Image 1 (cartoon, rainbow, N blue to C red):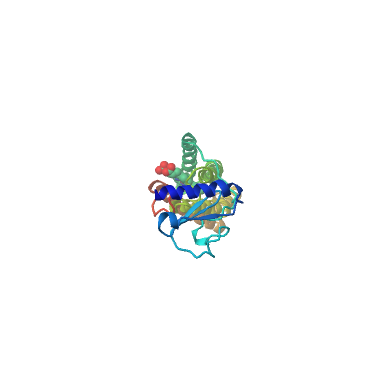
Image 2 (image 1 turned 90 degrees about the vertical axis):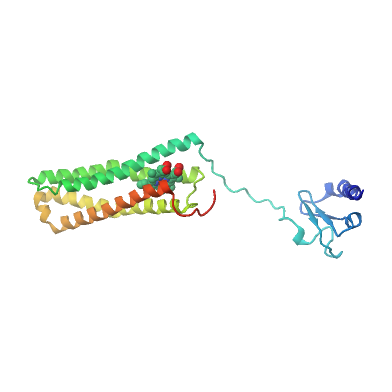
Length: 251
Ligand code: HEM
């Protein structure tokens, strides 16, 4: 019976007032009499807010109910831009290309180290030394740099933009971004130029370059930091698989 009275009162208000309300206007319905407790309803065209607190009549004016009872104002926020995500098949293809790029980058970089040892076996022909350095440059440009490093970067970008993995949602992913971008920058500005200098010197000096300080310096830096870079990439492979460290955010 009590509920029936309350509903009847709400119905009266709704019928008369609600249709004429502005979007940001609330009506308040005091149901204390019907429910035998201090109960108020605030209604606008989008929200119904209940209050069990006693209010004085001044703060409960129908046009401006107590702010603490109200839901967030019904303002129209623009929807955040939602990128389309790849479907399951698309993600499988993406992983295929990503791993192909990883294989080129890591495999190619290991090959560069292996070619370095070819020079250590007592060369007797300057042309051979030049040929090895040319081979190193060729493998670097056509396997390591373009399909490998750039491929990893591009497929990583697609992962971050078009799948739910995002850019920095997980620490292991942030790690991968740092390693990938760092390795590409280091390769472009240091490893690559050291390699080109070696090739140029050996083209000019032949076997004598093995005693040339500039050649030896570039070779030392290239093999040292090249090996460190390969080590970092191998760590990245295991980080990708094991996904260590706690997630920053659930996704
Ligand atoms: C911008 C850089 C990169 C981003 C954003 C990225 C992102 C991703 C994502 C989201 C996955 C899918 C993980 C899963 O399905 O479980 C993945 C897989 C993988 N990534 Fe990367 N990656 C990047 C660079 C690299 C690099 C540089 C390497 C190695 C040198 C690498 C190696 C791998 C491996 C081995 C997998 C397969 C993991 C598995 O299936 O368990 N990624 N990568």
